[in-house]
Image 1 (cartoon, rainbow, N blue to C red):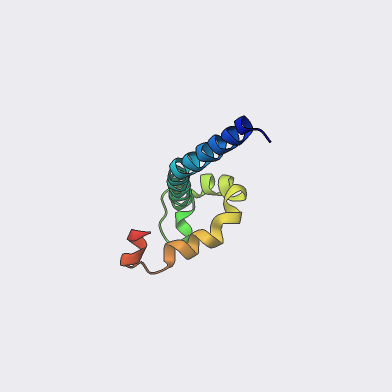
Image 2 (image 1 turned 135 degrees about the horizontal axis):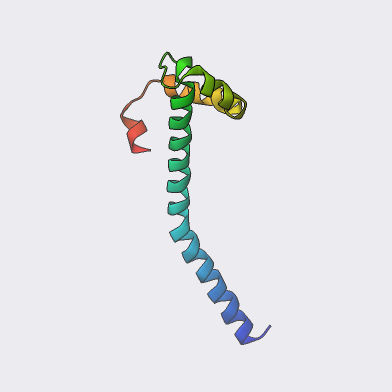
Length: 89
């Protein structure tokens, strides 16, 4: 293994670490935002499950096949008690 190959490997490793440090926070923020948007969308379309009718049932029924896999986790998240530590996460 030559000296140039070691330098290239080291530089590649440093670039990977720096990219991971910069990209990890952005990725977590994007996933958190996506989750919030998905839950808001489900609230708007399926709010009558919680007693909040926003859209007419016709549109809710049209979207139901796409939302069914997420309903149980959504209801659990919407109905659980909130406290101060939830705002910090």
